[in-house]
Length: 114
Length: 109
Image (tube, rainbow over all chains, first blue to last red; front, side):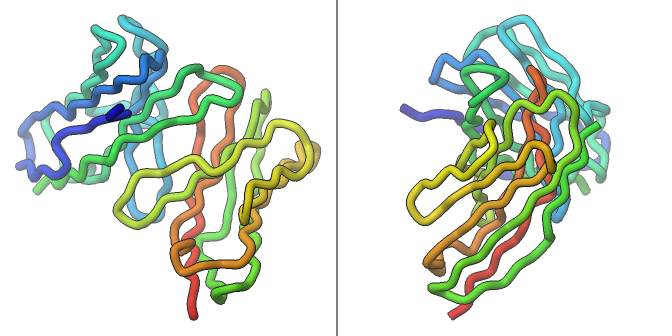
């Protein structure tokens, strides 16, 4: 049971480039999330999904896009990368969206934009 | 909105007890979580409180007072491996968790 798998673990981008962070989970969870974590700033929600075909914006969605074509996968796309998007990105999933909805996190993707 | 406050850093001695506080302001409160995050790793679930009172789980306990918008995480018999960041997160209705900035705990010999 792999849980939540994110790729790549590390990536350096040039300003203006685009890329996709991949996230897949094998726990049949309905809910999936993308957070970013900057030093000393905690986790901020970028986008989330309550099921296949449904996505919604979080606190900091600008500069990102997501899709949820299957229950398992929730890729995060960065268009026109900017230095402000340098961060550690965590994908997470949960069985339900409220109550004791324990989040299972992926190992994280460290992105640097130069 | 949801304001979640916790101390930025704390230091404690191996074998001691430490209490990490978290205060929050939110409407539609539906539970409070504590996560542990070691440097360079993903957060992992520690505890969940939705009713007032103390939940004990081994060396770790978590307390909640909904009327005061207050929670704490209590770590007993501190070990060096407890050095990590501790994240308080609040669940509001059906919306995703909102995290505080985390408290970095250093355990020293």
